[in-house]
Amino acid sequence: MRNVFPILTIVAVIFAIWYAAVIPMNFRLALDAATRGGEEVIPATPDEQGETGLIRLMLDNPSVMPAAYAFERPRLPQPGWVATEIYDATFGLIRRCEWQGWGEDSDNWTGLSDGCLRVVAHNRSLIFHAWQTMAPTLLGFAIGTGLGILLAVGIVHNRVMDLGVMPWAIASQTIPILAIAPMVIVVLNAVGVQGLLPKSLISSYLSFFPVVVGMVKGLRSPGAMDLDLMQTYSASRSQIFWKLRLPSSLPYLFASLKVGIAAALVGTIVAELPTGARFGLGARLLTGSYYGQTVQIWAALIMAAVSAALLVWVITTIEKRTLTTMGLNR
Image (cartoon, rainbow, N blue to C red; front, side, top):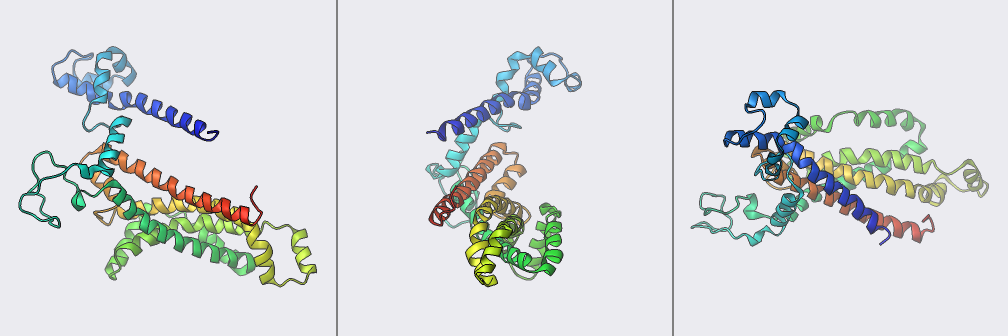
């Protein structure tokens, strides 16, 4: 309860700000709709409204404010709509669409009766799309973590790699992921590599750098006295690594893994955008932007945040157990 109360307080503040922000974000849309509907508004013409400040418009037209919460495609949906969309998209198979002459595996959507939700993949749930994003995320995270640890070990034990590889690792992160992701996807598709691997490579690209930096810092964390003590025991470099450097680096490693797993999820979502994927949170974001479904976009964003929080929680749990077992928990 000591941890739950601060979290709930922050969540309540966020939702309060969210609800309050709905009005200014959607007010001009509501005012335009009221003008077109023949209601009396101040000023009366769209041109004059465009030249008037938002705060002034809100003060002159308080009766329009409730309409800002009622838009079907708002700029900022209210949290209740997003919660409903998440519930429907997660447990949305309760909505049963009536197929007229087509089987379950058909791609023909013209047979859907009125009122049925046209969802790709035969009305798959949002959990399914989240898993389609998390699968390449986990693979890319594993690749990036393994590569990051190997590079860190080489950088710490080899002066040439320290001077030659570390600057390139830093420079690689200056390339925008939105620029490199389409190139990687196109090149790999040209050689016949599709599916999980291209998205995993983009994911690993974002996740390996935090691991490299954290692991290098951790491997170099033992002090000179500790290293001198190991040398007085005639310990070899491998013994120093396994008995001193590696245990000392674990707190730094787990801290970087938390950053890396979140970055890996972002990389996977970005990689899904140029591929035209039918599944995944990136696909949900893309289709939502195409058709102006802001509620769907926000639902996918919140599911992505929940997925990232779940992955970080798993790493935190492993961290606590590992450090407690090794007597390093603080």
